[in-house]
Length: 262
Length: 225
Image 1 (cartoon, one colour):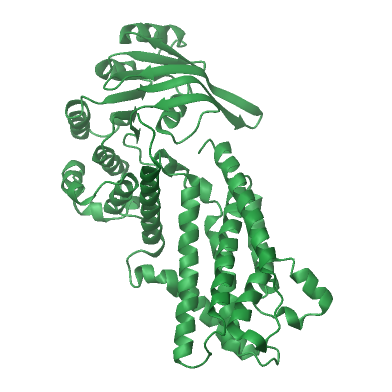
Image 2 (tube, rainbow over the protein chains, first blue to last red):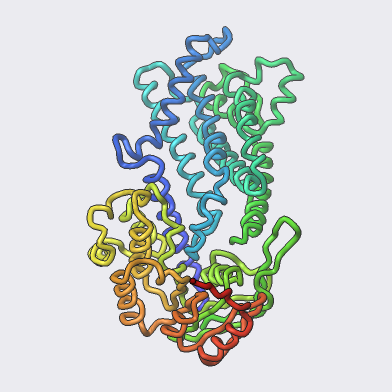
């Protein structure tokens, strides 16, 4: 048989991702009531709830920041790395039987799950921003390009982390068990509920070791502009993402092979 | 042509590694067929997984010069919360086949009626088998992998499978794996025996059968008083 051409391979890749996406969407959201719109509705409800709570609790700590924009930027940033990882955990074990279809690989399952989570979180972020802009509860982001680049970097971070932790969860159930408390503890540390500027200098250095803090700060830099002092180093986030991606793909390949798969 | 070159497969078990397939060599030409006999645990299913590409060999090479099916009537890849139709759509999308023209065939073959639009988790084993077999027939392959699936189901279903597979698709290659020599004898032109991790190839089913009997420990005789 002739070697499969590159174009044909792309075509197969597209088919497989499309098939997995549709399968995932229908399995998760069904056709009842809102159906696939829950993909966006679920993160929106989360974000709105957090926004309401933070507004009531005065989480902007006396700063002049509008709490609604603060909550939307903060909580949306959490969703991209928390939900992607949650979805990919135990993803290998659950989908081994799909590998009987020769063109489906473990990575395809991960990629589609990540795409779905990231799209849902992005749509929720965009729709909420537009809705509150229309209500004039928030103002137009100062620097849209910075918001978009920060968001893309955060999505990359979420995807890379999901591949790494999802793949590692194939080695031991401990990974999944430890991830949940870790995610819970990382949430308050991720910069969602505070600005790095509010911390004492020693605290800033520690918290800035976490890659997602840079992303969240950068989103806010783009949203609020000069009103806030932000601390972020996009290069640091990019390097972390690269390392996580490489490590994730490596672990995923090894995990799939250990399970006998591909 | 499908060719296995010195294929080994090891699995990690609690005490180190266990070699299930030990330097297996094997080939099958286009349109030809073979039965593979082996007792429970001999490595038949492992061989099927390697042939279908669900798993990769620990060492050695598998060359697939023709398209190879997933194990026929394999129900494991169903998403239980999806309906029969949704599972059909999924399989068709993976293989880039339009599902709409296939609905009449699947409806006719499975006789599932309204159940085709119900989640697969509401199906009985027999119903799942029928759907799985219909899906296997929905995608055209050069070579079918048959893992004893034919033995399940009632006579009517067995007859329909027979027509679809061995009559309508008699130009295709297939690999039938079984512990039952009679099934192999009925359907296959040659046979091989999996024993002790090795695949012993024979030109005729009878030779394979004789070998299989010889290496098989005696079946305990049951006394009825």
